[in-house]
Length: 49
Image 1: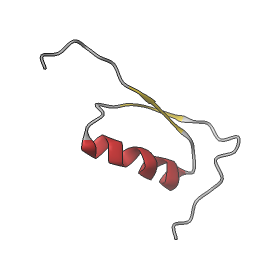
Image 2: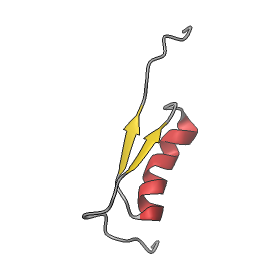
Image 3: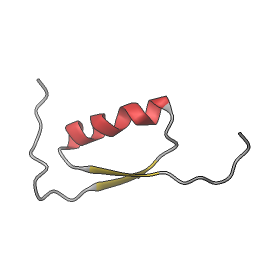
Image 4: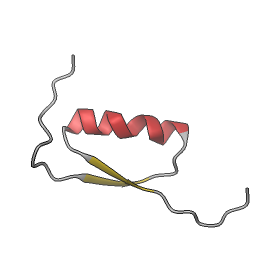
C-alpha cells in the first residue's frame, strides 16, 4: 500500500490534459502520489475529428 497523505485542506493540483489514455491514467496516480486533490481541465479546440 503506497504511503499517502490526507488531501483534506491540501492545495489542489490543476491539470490541463488531453484526455487520452496515458494522461487519464496519471490523474489518480498524481492524486495518490502527492496526496492532493486533482482538478482537471479539458478544452475542445475544434480540431478535426
